[in-house]
Amino acid sequence: MEGINNTAGEIGHITIELHGSKCHCGNTGCFEALAGGWAIERDAQQAVSENKAEGKLLLELAQGSITNITAKILTQGIKQNDFLSQKLINNLTEALIAGGISIVNAFGPKRFIWGGGIIEGLPQLLPLIETGIKKRALHAATDSLEIVPAKLHNDSGVIGAAAFALQTFKKI
Image 1 (cartoon, rainbow, N blue to C red):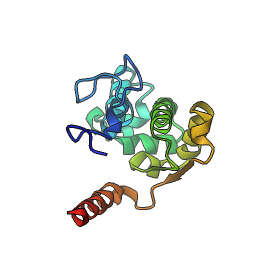
Image 2 (tube, one colour; image 1 turned 135 degrees about the vertical axis):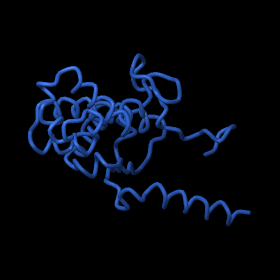
Image 3 (tube, rainbow, N blue to C red; image 1 turned 90 degrees about the vertical axis):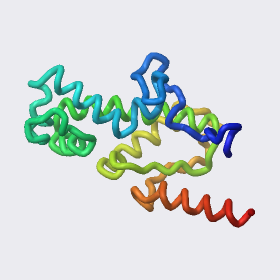
Image 4 (cartoon, rainbow, N blue to C red; image 1 turned 180 degrees about the vertical axis):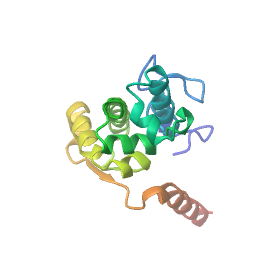
């Protein structure tokens, strides 16, 4: 799948919230702008800067600097039952579900493989995402859908790109 300008498959830029946060691409409400690593970081930093009392633990974990708050710090906050971290992760989970529904409805995959730092750091999110997708996506698209964690971890994208390149060059 390439598209006319090699942009097909840019699922990070499907709109999942019409009036959502601004994305690096210039659009608003992109999947990436709500659930990408940089968006998680942005939202956590903004939440702490707006309410330092509620963000006390995250600020401590980030050694007192709001700019040090990352998705990994947020994961640590979840593991310590931090209220703000849980609120942010709940919002993120809803964004992941919304994006997942769009992908499932558009492409009807047999298997949906989820990876990345948040999924690896908080594997308990995957069953929540699966439940949300299967509850709200088209039932015909979810009948035999498998939702699984990436076995290749953070190397999945690189390995997939290499496999795609090898497959493409074999055709030449």
